[in-house]
Length: 332
Image (cartoon, rainbow, N blue to C red; front, side, top):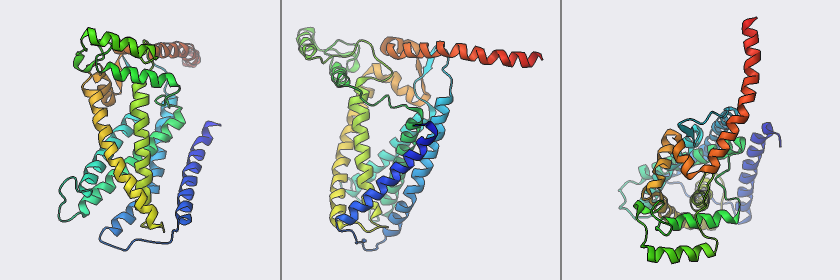
């Protein structure tokens, strides 16, 4: 597929998904709109704004995707770029939106004491939802344009290595990747390591840009959680502007509440893996600065460093060829 046709394909896919959702709603007995209440106008406004937010997010994602593909590989210096600006933006917008959604959702589910007037809580919940929609739309559009789906698992080996890296946090393979550098006693960890290795479960000796644990146990679960929350939340809110069967809304509401719990548990796991393992702290910093130390990459992501060096070497002849005509014009 030609690159210029990709935005149209993404738009068509989203339009098709919307049509399919509405069709399913009617097939399940659609024809009902909820009774109007004090929250009706707020929810209806959100439902009408979602397509606009999604369209804007896709344009932003396409902009960052084209910007990423146009950027020339830079020589490997003291630091290298791990994340582009668009990726960092979508990550933190999604994080803020999801945290707002989880806190307000916990209030709505009475896990936290409710205020007398819930309207502000629901409005904040809608704002959080809009931020997540924007972040997801931007992230998908950017990666479709730039071809940057490196966080998706590619083989069963990723699963085995992801499990190995997770077990490494327990100190089974020594102190380097263990929580606070505290390994298990050698008498315990050595037989455990040998047992897991016999089944092919072990940390990879050479790693690419992303850890297997990032692919299998972070990005993929989050993609599923966010996807389910968006689909179920969309059904809940679109019932205010289109007829959707109450039974379907009830089913989606229940699933939405279940995945709220799953999201909270996953957030705890995610933060624990980041902040309890010192080796991961530079990765956290890179989500703010976009860059990471070359020395760190050389030690823990050697395959990626090789790719960076190869790309920089291949770019040098092309840059030299472009510079020569420019020098000739300047002399003339």
